[in-house]
Image (cartoon, rainbow, N blue to C red; front, side, top):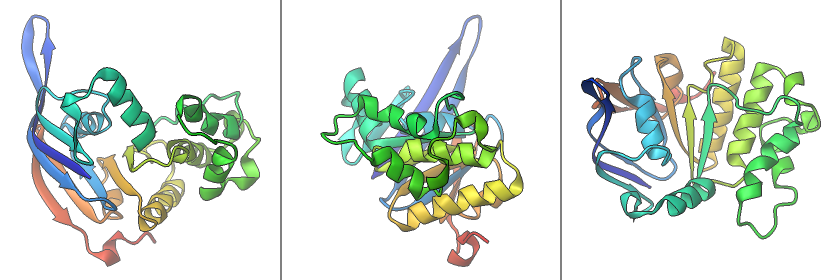
Length: 231
């Protein structure tokens, strides 16, 4: 599904040396994989996620998504591909606090080209175990429940790829494990997931771990099935 070839990302700084956030990253991710990208702060893992999500173009290299060269796509084409094929989950839930869970999940459908959207948001909330919280405002939900709403929002357009950036960073350990259990079930159902984290314990729940240091991919390893299963 994903092929990165020699991806580099450089940010200029007025009056200072440029920052090389990514350096020659090459990576292939097959459909249905659950990949954790780990590394310390400043290692380039979030920049890599932004490139994968078409939020930030690379300075060099090629990014192919499902065989399409994304560098050859215009801004509008990238936005359309992002809306239809990629779902995002962030550490900050980015929900509208005075809006119901259902209405938060419905927001991406406003920009969807789907012929029929009725019932999709409700089904997404049911898939993450929030059938009984559909009409609750986001501000009335716990942190773990808010992140479930955010996951449902990422799923509502049925994306091919789900990107999660530190999705348990604002949660307690129990809620974090529940969220990882949801990701695991989504992956077992065939969803391709890339999870960015600094926590190697969370990475152990994934089937594959890519290690970033200094903007480079320094290791790429498989995780045993027993270790990947959430407890």
